[in-house]
Length: 481
Image (spheres, rainbow, N blue to C red):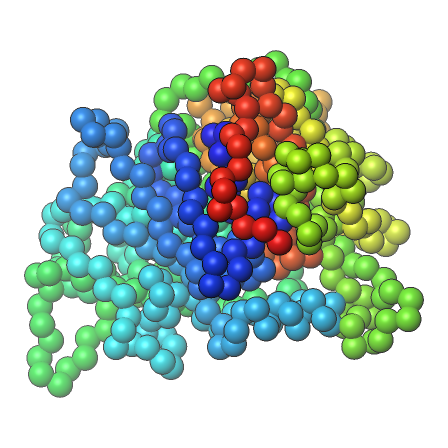
């Protein structure tokens, strides 16, 4: 709150930290308990530069559930047998889709199903009868993931550092950027059980990493096998890679732990399309730079604007110092052209404009955003993340959002509080928040290939009238370009 300089995305709130340089992030945690994470926000560096950020209850208070015997962060990641920066540079150069990852990981290790690392497979120890808290984080770069533990059920108690009304499930689905806190009780015969994660890949016909990462839940009382005998851990049942029904059942089960105050009067009613696109090959460009479908270049956009990062100043710096020409504040509140978003979209709508457009919000504005997926090139699930805010997810559904009928589905009593919404494949999500945190805040798809292609926009939230409603001054060690 009020310290947007500590947000971190390159060219949004700061210039990147240069090699050999340093920058100290200073911020105050307010109203959040549970699991978040930290990561690089420059190109594809977050592929390996990330970790858990755990916020415990204040001293003298406790969890809203029985205190677990122990807590274990479970970080799901992606691995390339290459420098990830080289992978995205090649894709940017050619206009084609980047190579998919070679493996997924759990706490940095791929697990027993790859040809490399079984001696280092992550092991989580448990005692029979105890209930433990797993803090599951999808730190993967480009892939939603299913996660499960053989023969065990989860009780979901939180997500994105907000408590949730507990519900039971045997499988989680997390988009990149999302976290889920679950209780797991060691109530099975003492043995070794695989934890496993694999892709939820909703885009038809699009290549993805179809491998499975494993870790081991090991009961301390598990019998030792006889000498020379290898007993494999019990393997779980995982959903099919395209099991949208399971993904939807999971995401739509979330509720806030108690009744919440949702803004009912709306000052800004916004409608943003989110999806892919194809740019025609620029005049004079070589065919080697247009290796997308039919000699095009992949792109992505919100409301037909493909977001372009500045290079000489951060947007927050340009706003605070009044530097002209870095951005404009005319990001459209609705799509420039209304069309059948999830139907057969005319090819004339596949090519967005490229620009650095922000949308200005007054301090205290009550904001509703309909996030509408499109079927341009292909439809898929988009994890949309908003910096600087948590928001309530009122509803989600498939097809085109219909304000006449779909508003009746809004949960205005106990909607979940999240920072990343999984917009369903060929569907929509509706979110609300109050713009009470001044600064420049990027909203983007958390599939990094999509943000690279421009599936992002940024809000400029103005200062309020008092000092406590205003952005703080920039720190003296803020990196410069």
